[in-house]
Each structure stands twice: as structure tokens, then as C-alpha cells.
Image (tube, rainbow, N blue to C red; front, top):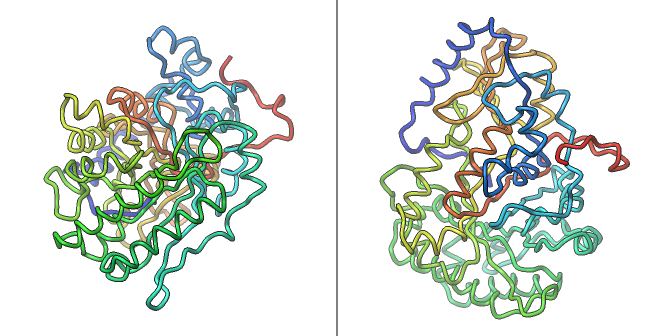
Length: 433
């Protein structure tokens, strides 16, 4: 997940960063700036609480009362407020699916998933890879699985557990032979049965695109057939947790790389082809920019274009397929060097962001074109940087966009954020009454 991609859908990112830099220089005297939170997994989850059916209900929450969901920002209040969370850990107010990813390398996500289980419909630990082993296949990753955590998760809420499986196997080995396709599906289904999972999240399209097989109509058809076959196999197995429910398949898809679909893109026809076999599509609407072309993480206008490409403007097709789209929301940011000779920079997580705020005390800016907050700073070598990181305002805009389409959301990933885990819940300051 969160793989870097080439620049899509014509937004001039370098110009935006340069113009944003000029705004910083010209507006350093501003002082009338109001609160906002650093993005944290809990804050974003709490944000679902705020997106109710009417604007008057939004205003009842603490963050709206305090003016925290705003285009204005103050680094001091980010540092002050970032560890405050909601005491409501049981009730979920976002009506569409919410999937949260967890990675072993950011272990805080495991604890957050247990505590805020009921805020999610699906939790996906990043555990498995299906690889080629000479002429055969092997599913690796059970050593990552934590049975004690799974058991605890089952007792704290209703979220389904769907570990992610990445298809690393050569498509020539996996897709070219029916015996190998059946072997791969059997490995995955057997693992679900033995470990008591509720299904899996499958990531393969980006791998197949990298291998260049999606330009071949025959291989593309085999790829789609494999995903359909896997979905059908999972749907034939009953869930151990919920009587009458079948195992589920969520499929990871990247956003189209331009407004005109390319051969390797996952497009609306592919969406329709897999719609019966797949329970949800985890759409990676992030990593819009990269160190070679710095700018925002996920411009709102770009997200709107991507959804329109996949779902169309309106009608029964959009209404039927939209609930299966899980709009990707990043819980990480980027620190880009604006010097061509300085290495470019890259992704940062919550603790990195807070450290930068503490050290540089920057003026936070709102980029209205992308709908994201950012700031500019000079490092110890006097190299200029642009930092884009999610805020309550940027998150709320994306939640509202997803809601307007009738889409779910997928979060990459809940362990990346800054959150001060306290020994006792009652010492954590209340965010929502």
C-alpha cells in the first residue's frame, strides 16, 4: 500500500508549492489563527462522529464548538491537543464501511484497533505475502499473526478481521496455469479457515501492472478471472464469527493515472466485472505527489475526478457500486525538500510531524486548491522544505466527499499517527461529549 506513482490528473504541483511558499513569506505577520489538531487515528475516527446528517448536529461536537475544524491553523495547539481522544469508543456514526489497516512496524495500531474496534467495520493487519517458490507457491506471514490480539479484538467489538495478502508471485507462474491458480486460492481459503479470519484484503493489481501483463488482453482476463474465482471461493465459506455471513474479499485498487484511462488502469469496466465477487474495493487515493514532484498528498479535486471516472456522474450504477468503494485516507504526510540536490525527502508519520512543529514552530498554511494544510521550513543546512500533513479540516472534507458519493473509507494506516496511550482511559482528555 501507499506505493509511489507517477503524477496523475493534471495539477501543477511544483507551481503550487512555489506559490504556497510565496504566501508564507508574504503573510508571516498574521496572528489571528485558531486551533486545529494534528491528525491522529483517533481524531480521524472521531471525525466520523461529526459527519452526521445535518449541519446543526455537527456543531454539537467539541471540535466544532472550539473552531478546530478550520482552514486556519496554529502549531501550538497541534502540540497541545494531539493526544486528546473521544471517550465514546462504542458507537459508530459513519453509515458506510470503514476499513483500518494495521502494520507490524507501527505496532501502536494494534492497541488502537482494540480500543476503537466498534468504530470500524473491517480491520486489516498487513501480514501475508503469496510468493513463488521454484515452480510452486507458498503463503508466508503466519508468524506475523497474533492470536492473542485476534481473540481480544473479538471481545471488544464487531469489526471483521481481514488480513492483507499481497500477491508477490510471478503472474506467469500464478495466472498462466489453472493448477497454480487453484493452488493459490486453496492456500488463502485454508489459512482463513485455520486462523478464523473473516476473509482477506487482496493486493495484486499494482504488482500485475508492474509486470506489464495488463496490456495483454488474455492475461488481463486471467487476472480478473482469478480475483472472481477467489471471491467465489471465499463466499462459499461461512464466517465463524457471524452466523449466516460468508467470508469476504476486499480488493486493493489504485486510482487511474490520468483522466484518460490507460491500459494498466483499473477502470469502471473492471469494477463492474468484479462487483459480484468482491465485497469492497480499497481505493488508494493518496501518494499523488513524490520527491521528484513535491506537493499535496491527495488533492480533493483529484479525488473527485477519480470517483467520477470509476462511478460516473449519477444513476443506478453509481448508487449500486459506490458503497463498495472504500475511499483511501492517508494517516501520514510528506516532508519534501525543495532543493533538487538534497535528496527529495519522503513520507513522515505523526511523531515526525510533531518533532518538526516543536523544532521549527512554523506558520501553517491552507492550500485551497488541494484542500490540505502544509508549512515551509529551512533545515539545519538551510535547505527549504514543504511539509504536507492531514488535519481535521482536510480529513473532514474527504469524509464529506465520500459520504456524498455513498462510499466507505479505508485508512492507511492507524498505527502511523501520534497518539499518547495512557495507562487509564479516564486520564485522556475528552474530545466529544
